Length: 330
Image 1 (cartoon, rainbow, N blue to C red):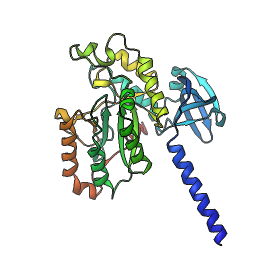
Image 2: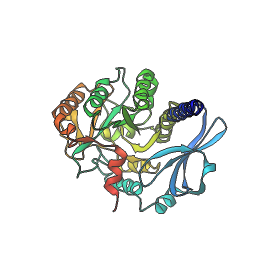
Image 3: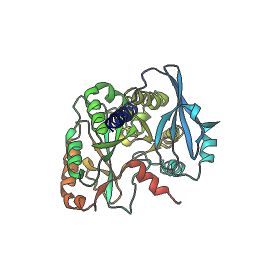
Image 4: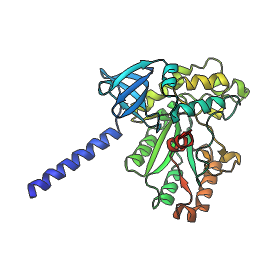
């Protein structure tokens, strides 16, 4: 009996180690990272391939479950694979929430600011929280995370949050990034990582239609793919979401982003601008130290909902589930 118990303890330890190692998988030697589309089947699930890359001599796919918007990295050998163009793949998966969300984002591509999906589940009481990590010399606003953990620990654990991250922020703030990963590894928070471009260039003088990613000379391939590679090298899993820097885009740029298989995410409640969240809102704050007003307003909102949170009447929602549920059954 004692020997059996020892075997079980070793098994549990190895299983826990494997889960932890998988959660922190870093791809440090990426080459040939590119957009690559197709169908991958591993019974009973169909996946859509969105990227292909090589790491340390081994080939990998970035895959999305078109029903749940879940992403994962896996080796091609485990799947029946059929390469496709992006158009063919979108046609093949046209009935899924993922493709419907891409189409919805494209239909809202006209406005210069805030194109894309702006709200999630309007029938639910609660919000989807997104925090942007734009380049900044200031430290991460950790109070956002510690306060939501404290408020929700009895009703939601881990607490879902979506973080829009830039390549420059990852480079500037390795310690803050490690802290976020630690919070996720300890199951305090569950992070959906949103591509927010690599450089997040901005001009104080250019008009919006020539600013941010619309600035002349912007290499959109670099801004998208280099950010994803930086995520993977830092042990982060890219999602299918993209947030435009400054929430600024035009129709051409929106379609360039959706051609990468990415769903632009806007907001209907940028707290620092005084926009009040409604049921199902995708709320925007900045967690990079540059927007104390927005952070203060969010903490105030959180405190005002203490009783509703305790009764599970006001919750935070996973961005993937928020978008997925909106297009289920359509």
